[in-house]
Image 1 (spheres, helix red, strand yellow):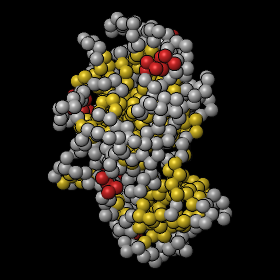
Image 2 (cartoon, one colour):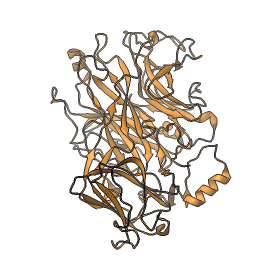
Image 3 (tube, helix red, strand yellow):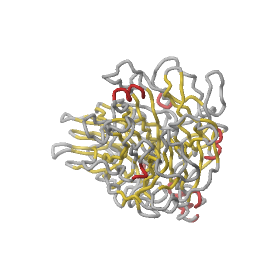
Image 4 (cartoon, helix red, strand yellow):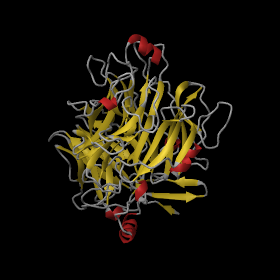
Length: 576
């Protein structure tokens, strides 16, 4: 048995043992080559799975939905209703929510001479890169792509092409950002001057070596042939970066990375072509980030690679551009991060037109950010293809076109999730230029709610098991005539005495992202810990977003906190 616990160096061994004994959290069981995750999903012996190259556009299969665990452990994180994994039966209606853009957007825009390209096009936005909350500094921190025309550093740059480097900004509140002047190139906020395309900057809260706490997966031009490769670098402070510790073979430009704590693997999201689209994704993973980078390279259709596997491409439900309906949509990029009990995926969904048409028509290509959700980190479900963060094709808009997702997001700020994205505004300098950064805010856990009207309804979970005590929900019960009650059923579907809906302390006119549910004779569920049970939520005129069972009355979920946030545990786990 392999027990995996995510803590940083601030937590001593004695405390780790005590917490492990009390919670038994984040459990992954290895039997042979197979691995059972915290949610009861057992991965196949061959992992990552080898998918054949597609001949038609279709959605990804979801093997864990076709063969659910008999009993689903719910000890890790808030349990979200983003798919049907937790649901046995319901007559509630799923509602898909989108965030509200901050009225003061953009929160970061190009306003320095060194942020312009050789052609004068201004850039100041992450191209994946990263926005994180750093508990050590108490700051929101951003790494972003900027133009590179004004600076000549390691080598003379070719001014006939677009060149980019990495800059840095920080914030007290995630809204007002300051570009910090640094010492790499005095008088600028440049932290890395290598000519780059995409980049991933990752805060590795599980890293034991302080010098490697920050990891940069930089897609750089090779000096000898100008082709792209990934170079992995480390930093203790996110400002001063090491020389490359590993390098890939040749890759396509829009390639990124993420860490999957469910499997304890680093994964690379590689841009590559497949028979159904030139804008598809391939996948590499390894427990060692240096090995993951070293194994990455372009693929050939007539060669099977043991390390690089086809992941997914655009499916048959992708949005089309109404002005360019002949364009077959693609997946321009894909970023992912652990949030609570799931892996959250952000698609940069492309629907055209091609670059030469954008240049001809003086417009931006249309990329919107949409969401997918995974229980294992490889298979992702998209309940809707509608944009989560959409373009705004009106004159002067910061996000007229080509929106791109950002690593580290969402950040958790009180009851809100902070998402950021890049966007491009129309300009007369270069059709794909003028990038800036915008903020969008969503209710915590607010991706999908299960809605009940005035007539009411219910949702019954699959059989679950837990080792916590206190039941919490994220719910909005609209008014005094509305109600939320929960009852607990045994594995045969019978109500357990003392835990009926009538005995539940009914919730009325309450809107809370962390609300404890109790019963008249029971303040908690400790007497049922370890037993297979079902929860039946009875709701009228309201929204149910999530539930979880915490060891603490304060309601920490033991789930992953994505990019972090003020007041959260520095381990990256929501715990006391």
